[in-house]
Image 1 (cartoon, rainbow, N blue to C red):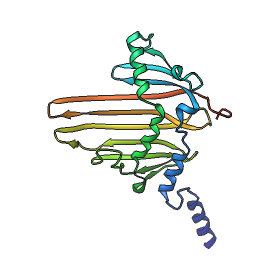
Image 2 (image 1 turned 60 degrees about the horizontal axis):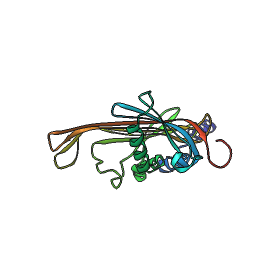
Image 3 (image 1 turned 30 degrees about the horizontal axis):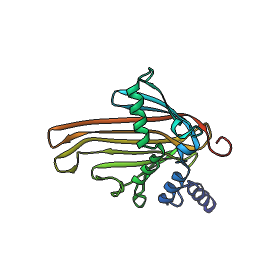
Image 4 (image 1 turned 120 degrees about the vertical axis):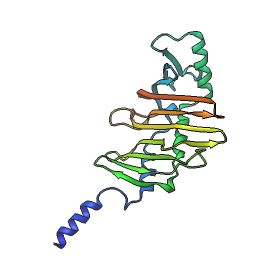
Length: 226
C-alpha cells in the first residue's frame, strides 16, 4: 500500500506545474517566444482592417526602405494612394512592438483556471499600468504542455466597461496567438485580433476591429533556420 501511494504521488507530482508555481510557468512560457520578429524573420502579414484585407511581405535582409512590400489589397494590385498609406503606417509602427503586449499580464496575479491533457489555462488580472481599464474583464493565458510555450493570451469583457466620463464599451475582445514559425521551430507571434465597440459622449458610436496574421516564415537572422 505504501509503495502504491508513493507511486501515485510521483505520477501526480510529475505534472510540470512547478509545485503549482504558475508564475514561473508563465514566465518560462513567455521566454520561449522570439519577440524579435522583424529582426530574425521574413514573413507574410495579412491585415484585415475595416473592410480591406492588406497582404504584405517583410524581409529584414533588404535595404531599410525596401523591407516591406505591399503585395495586394482585397486580392488586387494596390493603387498609389494605398501604397502611400501603407508606407506611412509602417513608418509609424513596428511589428515587433507586439512584444510589449505581454506586459498586459500582471504576473503576480496569475492563477490556475483549468488544466487539460494538452494545456494549462491560467487566469490573470490585467496590469493596470498597461491597460486603462481592468474592471469587468476576463483574462486568460494558454500554455501548451507539449512544448511548454505560450500559445494564447485572451481578454474579453463580461459586462460594460466605463473607462471615462460619457464612454461605455459594450464589446472588448483581444486575442493574441503564438506558435512555431516552421514545423518544430521557434515560437513566434502568429495572430493578433482586437475588437472594440461602444459609445462615447452617449451619442457617438464606434465599432473598430483589426485582425493580423503572420505566415510563410523564413528565418533571416544569423545562424541556421530554426
